[in-house]
Image 1: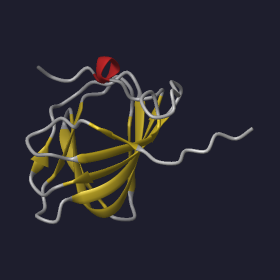
Image 2 (image 1 turned 180 degrees about the horizontal axis):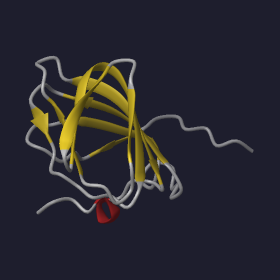
Image 3 (image 1 turned 120 degrees about the vertical axis):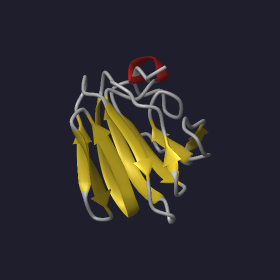
Length: 120
């Protein structure tokens, strides 16, 4: 039988400003450890700590611009574009523009604080 996800769970965010994270599928909301799917809404000027995650993160930007810093540079991912952050590579996400950004993040395996390996 299919599993019906009736609503997401709001997850506590990291970073310098409050960010809305609604997990639909993942360790918290559905008990799924293989994959997580979350709807993110970040305010303008938001920056989170860098991380070297043990999961691949696939991000599709719906509105605004998401900046992705990586070892050796950065790129701006605009609405209608996507980015893949590969497991074991350092990245830091931010929303540099005043309107912030809205995006969907899919992590394989599912996101966890322990496997994000955030910078101190």
